[in-house]
Amino acid sequence: MKTMTELLGVSCCALALAAFAGCEKKDAAAPAAKAGDHSHDGDHAHDHDHDHAHAEDGKMEKDHGHGETTQLGEQKAGPYTVKASRDGDVKAGGDVPVDIWVDGGAKGKSVRFWFGTEDAKGSIKAKCEVEDGHWHTHGEVPDPMPEGSKLWVEIEGEDGTKTVVGFAI
Image (cartoon, rainbow, N blue to C red):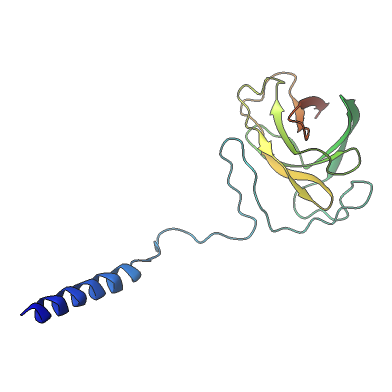
């Protein structure tokens, strides 16, 4: 009798495990993610699968569908020299690819940027990732875009100190 109870218990466990393993259903209504899909929630970074062909001077060699590259200049900010460029037009509610060079490359612990006012009120900060030896990501433009908006770049140094610089867009 005990053997039959144990056998029944083991059988039930095996069936439960088999059912659990088969529960990995995909939602047919949800679209599959594609290379280059972007998620933009709060302070974020993203991976994207479009190959930028950056020239050494920071200019795009090809358009890649982002629009023309606009050099935003170079500024001294604290201990850093910061250079920035953007691709395409800056439109309220839009998405803009931005490239940032810190001292000619990707110096610093992390880099974030946002469009809007220096205090970032109403803006979403975008955390950059190193791509081709400099910082890059896409950022959202607030809608409505505040009067006098700029591209603000925040560099977090290895010691945790933050330096902010603004570029006319």
